[in-house]
Image 1 (tube, rainbow, N blue to C red):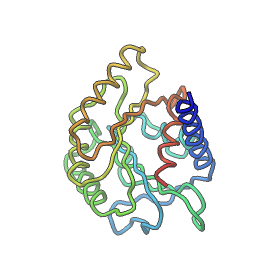
Image 2: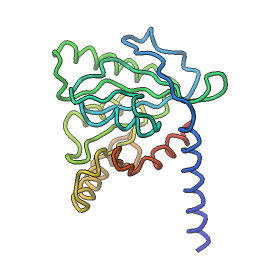
Image 3: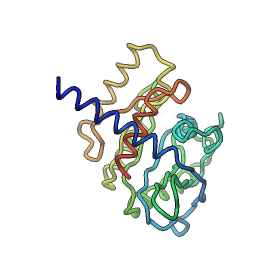
Image 4: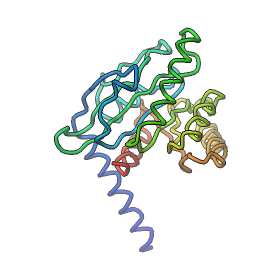
Length: 219
């Protein structure tokens, strides 16, 4: 009973830490199309990656409690650079939040996709303050080949990453748990993958507090 109570208290403390972190102002800094444009690595950093139209912008808006921090669009491939935001006070302490280019079925040329891949690989290899990449996966469909290709890149560059299932409100309970279980099993042998798969819904608010808590622990 004491152990259970302690666990509940720890969880509540983590949730509160996440709430306080994301209560801070969050401002757009810049969109980087090359490594020379990246801001100085003087604060902890987390990045969000996912297939085009996976709900990345909606999730960032939900996390920060804002409606237009990251613009949403039904047009796949809208994000074409590394978009940097800063959460907190630049003069004190805070967190870089990076919106990475979407991948998968983006309606762009193969040459541009190749440029994106190179930019992302160079970014992952050369960003010493990057604490974790959150790989967003459509919770209606589970892991796709393009998701696994990104995971392989993250394993190769030794960057810690965590799978986040989005749009979990759009599937029935049993199907949702099946997709969660499949994703959990799929990452067992991925050396850089965090063992816990998270489940979220930007519309219903599922898992938002928990994701904030995870991020706050990385600062």
